[in-house]
Image (cartoon, rainbow, N blue to C red):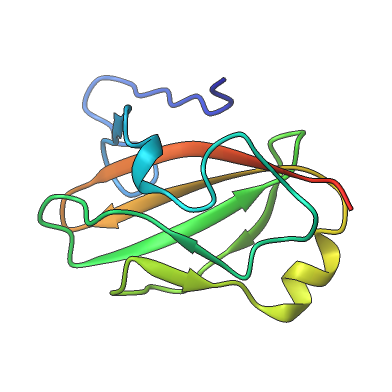
Length: 115
């Protein structure tokens, strides 16, 4: 299930530049893609990505609309703010990680909150 589309005209870049999407890393992320949770996760986690110097995480709702973007983080875990978690009471949420310094993106991963 992939909701993100990137279009690039010849000689132009998209967003932060050309983005490579890496598949097959589901086992390294928390929560696992497809998890059904009783409450929103306290944090997200992923494996280190190549030569990344930092990461940025974005969370989307089930309509693929952005609901939150992180600041730049150097760790491979990210605690979700309480105010964000308070808005994630029910539904499906997708998330992706962009690695700065390597222009690699992993995801989207998804979890469902079902109280």
